Length: 358
Picture: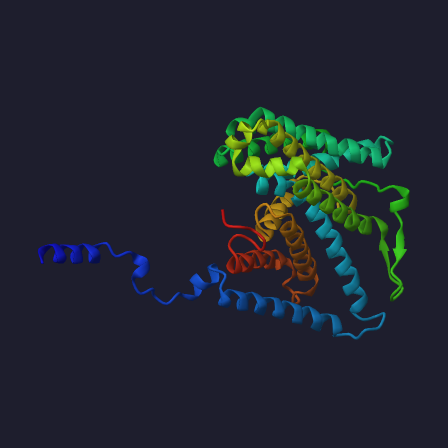
C-alpha cells in the first residue's frame, strides 16, 4: 500500500504540463502562431488594400484621361522596383539567409558598386564594361571584409554586426569624400536609354526599367540553379547544416563560404549599378537599400530565394501603391504601410512566408 501510494504521489508530482488542460489561446497567440485567425486577418488587410486601390483606379473611368493609364505605369514602376529590390536582397539572402553571416555593410557595397559604375561611365568607359568592373569591385571589397574580419567570427552574430557596421561607416565616409554629397545618376547605354510603346492608351515606358525586370528574372533563375542544382551549391548547404562533417569529407568550407560571400557582394554591387541608373546615387541610399533588403528577407523567409522574390514584389507594390493611392494627406505616411506589411506577415508566419523554423 505504501509503495502504491508513493507511486501514485510520484505520478501526480511528475505530471507534465502538456497533460494539463490547455487554456484557450488568445488572439495574439493565434496570430503569432499563424493559425486561422492570423490568416483571416491577413486576407482582410489584403482585401481592404486591394479594394481601395481598385476604387481609386476606377473612380475617373477607363479613358485616356482616367486613372487606368496611371495605374499601368505605377504597376510597371512597382515591377521594376521589385526587380531592383530582388537584385539587392538576393545577395543578402545568400550571405545572411543561407550562410548566417550578419552583414550590415551590404548597403554600402550596393552604393559602392553604383558609384564605381558612375565614375567609369563619366570618364567615358562603356556602360557594360562599367557594370562588370563595378560588380567585381563590390565583390572584392566584400571578400576582403569577409577574409579580414568575418571568417574569424563565425557564429558570433553581435560581433559580426558591430564589425560590419563599422565597415559600412568607413565606406560611407570614403564614398562621401571621393564622390561628393550630390545625387548622381548613371546614364544608361543608348540601346536601353529610349522608351518603348506599350500599345495601350498611347503609353510609352523606359526600356531600361523593363531591362531591370528581365535581369532580375535571369539572375534569380541562375542563382537558383547554382544553389539547388550544382555541386558547389550543395556544398554550401551542407557546410551550413554541418560544417565539421563537411570538412571531414575533405571540403574546404572556408573557401566555399568565401566564394559565396563574394557572389553575394557582387549581387549587391550589381544592384547598385541598376539602382543608380533607375533612381540615383546619394549618401543615405546605402541605409535605405540595406533596410529594404532586410525587410525583403524577413518577409520572404531566411534563406529562401523564392521567398526573396515574393518579398521583393510585396514590398515594391506596397510602396508604389501606398505613395499614390493613400487618402489625401496621408501619402507621407506610406512608410507606415510597409511596417504594417511586415507585421502582418510575421503575424501569419513568424519565420516569413517561405522560411523554415531553425
